[in-house]
Length: 280
Image (cartoon, rainbow, N blue to C red):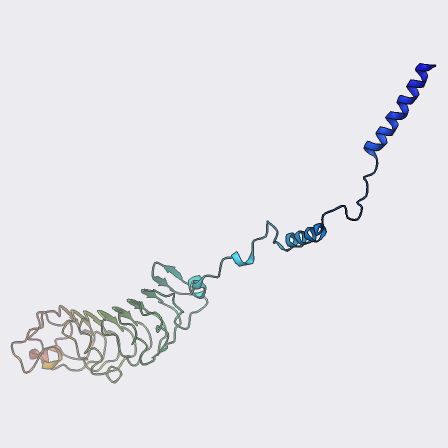
């Protein structure tokens, strides 16, 4: 009997202990937390919500747009490579000079439909050393179109529709205007006078009636297939200096012109080679 009573008491004690261990959490009583705890907790929650998610980059850290974006359209149509721009037979038709990337030194825009060279087409690309616009339909070039190109050495306007020449950069060493519609009245008397470094001058297959002034520096001169009818002593030599020698001029082509060169024997005495052309 005594043992049974002890067993019942033990069972009641275990039940009470279990209720105290696994029962509902006691509720917080007012004043049980330190002052300001709730307000500080809410502030920290708001601050965490204001932060950008870890997997979303901050907009302020996004890369800025490249300054070369303005060059992109030209370099999509053309090939831009190490200071050179190649725009040959571009499709759709290229009808004007393309906007060039800065620092462009060489432009090849051959066999397109460019109609005109404007005054500002090359204004921002003063680094150009060579321009080749062969095979376009250029009929007009604004005055001063090449005035800012102080480094330009080679210029080709061959196979276009020019009736007159613009002012040319003084540093040119090679100029090609073959196969245009040039007449003598469209080539100013001093067109090449200031080009003291000009070595190659190509004016073949035009409508010139006379030989223009040729700088002393010229080595190769092509005037074939024009309408030149005569030459004189001052065309290549100097009538007032019988000792004058023009040693730099090594190739002169005047074939395909009406002029009979044998009629003007004194016109070539200063030259080391005779012009190619008609002698009878």
